[in-house]
Image 1: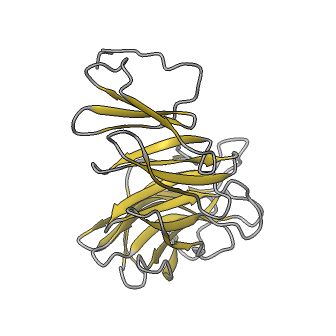
Image 2 (image 1 turned 90 degrees about the vertical axis):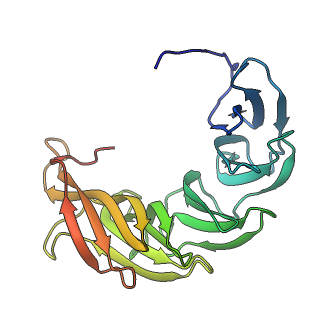
Length: 274
């Protein structure tokens, strides 16, 4: 746990970092990417900047061993991504989704594609978090999905994939006037087309006030979808003690989303836990 090296990077923003199996470190400063080696992190081996057409700065890097994938924001409004060669940091391709998003929420690397959840930059009526699939080799967007998890406002926060290539997402159904957690929701969408297969609300019972609940994690084990999240278990004043929530583990039917198991763990605390 002791600090071995501290390297000043300059008067810029650094958001993304990735390390490969050979000990090379890749990091971003604004719209530029740098490559160093862990044995001499002060020596820049390669660097490159990319057209502002794609993004102004990058806040996440992912390496699959063959290419680097950078995710960022353009004009503080449009999210985008580029694919870069890890050898000389040359650009393979770059693109950005044709709608406003603020940042990458979650991503998966499966079947030669990047699956990503993007959070919207602006919040207004009918807005959705967006999920898309991009071909890793060409950068072609194969589909995008803004399917609702039951209401006009929704936010997907985590996803995982089954052996058929379908995606399970969890997050929340938003309130009517703004993007804040309201009800815990799960959804299943086709990995081939992005079409909605089902969406379900996770609730304790039909009379429970689950106004401040959300799903935080999705995991598929043996093609069985499991989710973890926070469930509101008591009401309260936001200016006083506040609503109380309890963490839950939930298993749903993979075909229709019906809840098969719901188990609380841990204690109750003020929502949200963050």
